[in-house]
Length: 140
Image (cartoon, rainbow, N blue to C red; front, side):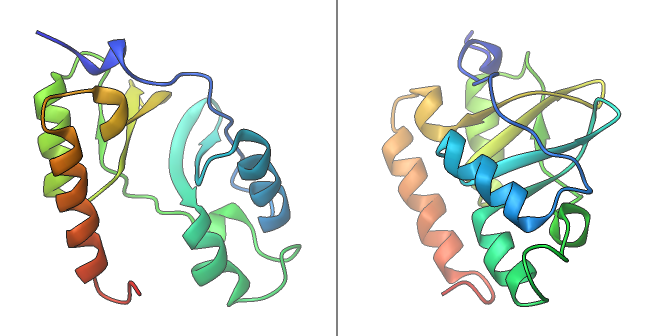
């Protein structure tokens, strides 16, 4: 049985809820990612995507006046390091997400994408997720 601990990336940058949009964007650019976990007191509290910065953030004001806590998604679908790969892929497809934050005891451990999992048919599952995401409310 394969578990996501064997596939997840653990060296991701994180930000604090008080970091402003400019800081979030800078970290995303430096790490070449579109997803930043938000951590406070060593516990994950949410996540911000590049889309959140534009749609939820810049639409509200300037990059200096809006903070991660203002735009982050707090109720994040997560997995655990010992979760089975197929279960993780099913969870991602069911919730129409491209990345799964991996947490253990409310602490951020890493992130895994469908491509990371390398499961048979991952390309088709990813295509299904992208197709479903594009149908989502307000997602152009």
